[in-house]
Image (cartoon, rainbow, N blue to C red; front, top):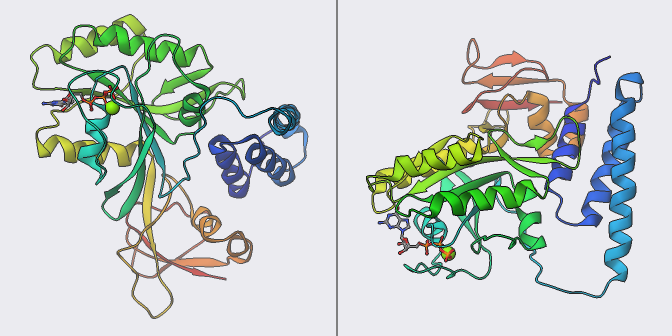
Length: 329
Ligand SMILES: Nc1nc2c(ncn2[C@@H]2O[C@H](COP(=O)(O)OP(=O)(O)OP(=O)(O)O)[C@@H](O)[C@H]2O)c(=O)[nH]1
Ligand SMILES: [Mg+2]
């Protein structure tokens, strides 16, 4: 029997995957249970969520009672999505942040320069995307805050130094450190179909120093050693064309579309797009603006990819990048 889950449920599930604390997890799981239709088709999912909820409540109790220890990382989310930049030492993570945003991270030709995560905003065609630079990852060195940052990210740039012979092994070590912690890098993110505890994070392999003659061979070697496959982009960060291509990849990694809203009789604000998941509907857009709007929504009028300007469409209509929408309750 199909589960027939609603857009509001999917939003709660997405918020759960992005939750950074046990308290946030408990809140999202409670909402997921509340929003889930109760019938035979959702029995297994309900049981999964209940066991996740009791685990999250235990963690919360433990956190409240335990003395504070170790480095923590609390970076507020901003923009349409968060992309975390990770990799081995000296592969070009901070240089990527520097080229794509206005931040001024320390960039140096020697390893272990970055010690703390650094967030900064990247703009792509009116959409703000949060990028986070991180310290290098080596064997056995994934602090809990970094694991959490990666598991709750909307996307990951896994960086390989195309100019270094040891980079394939170093990058493989990064992948394996995460895999051993139930975190996999895949083309599309989300929970594993069989287990809520395995998280698939949408990732792309970025190979820096693309002008190096052996850079492609090094990226191939990594894929052979790993046995997995990720879409790969070679970049020479001294050149603006590559920087622009990398910005576009970041936007595409988030798997979102831009939608502009307007009020009747008024022009749309084309400078401020809202973003929803690619393949999202009019109802998803309404949920994004306000849940009450999603409840009372009757229809929408559409300018863009419809049959004609002002076409009337229902709540299940699938929007496309660049559409202008007027919501009617
Ligand atoms: N020419 C060129 N230099 C690059 C490229 N990518 C990285 N670099 C250089 O490589 C060096 C290391 O870059 P960083 O960004 O500091 O490396 P990192 O991964 O942040 O290093 P850690 O913080 O130590 O982990 C710097 O000198 C960068 O300018 C590239 O595509 N082209
Ligand atoms: Mg760095």
